View 1 (cartoon, chains in turn orange, purple):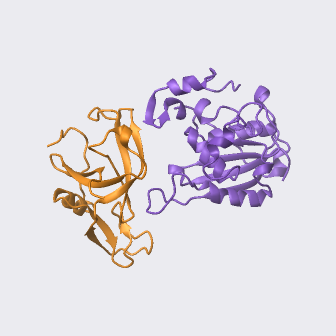
View 2: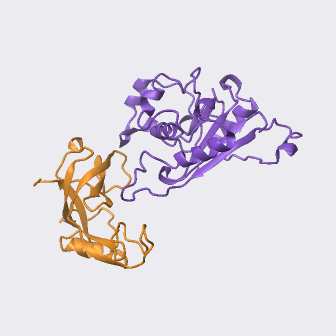
Amino acid sequence: MTQSTIPVPEPDEASRPFFDGAAEGRLMLMRCIDCQTWRLPARQHCDVCLSDRYRWEPASGRGRVRTFGIMHQRYHPAFQVPYNVTVVELEEGPRLPTNLVDVTNEAIYVGMPVEVVFERYDDVTLPRFRPARDL
Amino acid sequence: MNPLAQMREPITLEDYHASRWIIEPLHLLDCCLVSNGAVAVIVSPADRAKDMPQPPVYIHGMGQGHPGDSGRAGSEWETETGARIAAETAYRMAGVGPSDITCCQIYDCYTYTVLVTLEDYGFCKKGEGGPFVEDGKLGPGGSLPTNTGGGELSAYYMWGMTPLSEGIIQGRGHGGERQVKNDVILVTGNGGNLSYHACLILSPHPA
């Protein structure tokens, strides 16, 4: 268990498969049935073909750091600064805002290969990423 | 130089580096101000403006660009903004190009916003904004005076009205000791994540 005092997302109908997948150790993404484009965050219509048909598929959980920032300003008392906010470009293409763990802020770089890990809070499991171990 | 500016004490490069991190790589002095205020602009047909108490500033061109693709797979939205599309439209309408612009009033919510905007307006190549401004050309006495009133970083943060208000002050010739060559003034404004952008090309000379 990690400390549960940080504010965590409340899954709703649209995002529940994402959080249910995380609880089971899988990174689930919405995907268009008609043109196969991934949708992240979950949304009703496809960016490319506007289809409203989709299914949920597991992603590989691997990606690379696209960009990141180190937060020094404390916006919430539960967050210990400095911490990183990182956008991971998943192997499948979509970009997921997250945090890197098991790495010092100084060691993060754009293009860094990373893999998903899951951190359990009281009611919700969140995907985070760590440096990739097997390349 | 702008009596209305919130921040009027000169700063040095050392002051900049010594200012605290907000979100690294952005220091406090990379970020715009928080301001309370208001700006109003009167827009009228050119012939009606002749009799107004203030000298008119003419709109020669305008453009918008709203790719709205921030965060989307494959997008380069962090460095390629809506300004590129807006620039093309406004330059064509005004019949000018980057080399004709005599001063810029650029939306500067953060320091780097100015660099990517100058790149998208064709003043230099993509990725070369830093070296382009290194010689001080944007500052007092420089060849491309920019944000002459202090911009959102030093004067006041009134969203797109900050660059617009200074564009009009310069266009009227009311800049006082900060007045620069005002023949062709570029005014730009951004919305969310630089993915929404609009601009004007202004001049004291009738279109």
